[in-house]
Length: 114
Image (cartoon, rainbow, N blue to C red; front, side, top):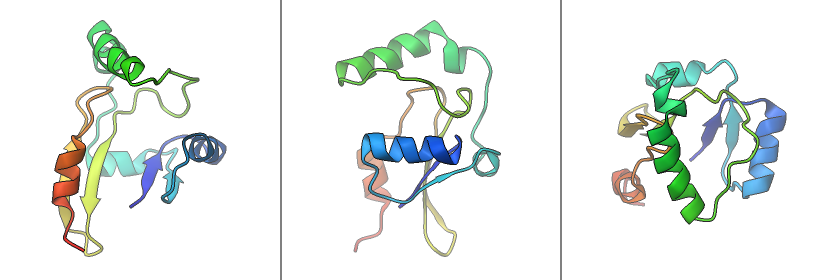
């Protein structure tokens, strides 16, 4: 498992330390990996709309999270890919808007049995 962000290496290191990331964390400031995955970079309501801010913001605050300083490309929408070493994609979720996360149970169900 690995995480790919789009900030600078210093931002990635800060994120890993702040949140205790226990898997390899990479950064792709060019966002080429996001482009290859087909993940959108919309301007407007998908990122900054009131509906997105209220839905995602309320859920985050309820979970005890607070928005800190934005790092990396704030307009880049992410997602989840589960990819085998062979390159076969076992699971894909492209976020439709900020806060549109894949269900963890769906991600885990896609993993091959150990």
